[in-house]
Length: 155
Image 1: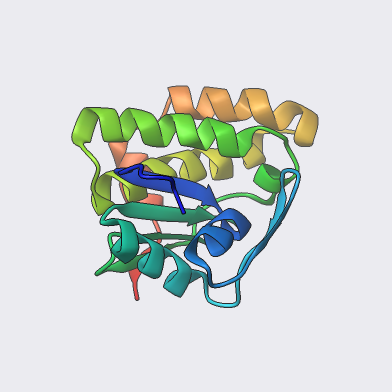
Image 2: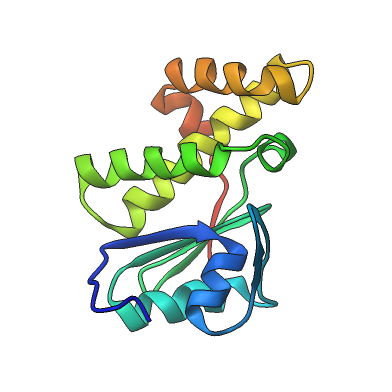
């Protein structure tokens, strides 16, 4: 399916991960529709490829094939502003580059980004001002803010 590649991390929206896992999903341009069980999609794909898999959406799921985390931070503006998924991929890449490919580094990257999105949503007046507010929130993020706001659940 991934043509001989050996990825350390696969990150996509819920529809993309559903399609890759074979458990169902739909991708139409930048829009997606996940499978009925996104937690199983990430676990199954992670187990198949021996890597960490993240499916992003209204709720995010991350798995290393054994453990599945449900991450519940974020803002509805993220789905209304094109490019936020790509921005998140960059943040995930930075965390993986600095900390290695692990369940914790990928879940931490997604959580930091989504906490910043929550903060940005309180500082913007709509989708047009959300993106710069998100960049500002990411720039000023600190561990105390993330730790106090992070919503993770092991399934």
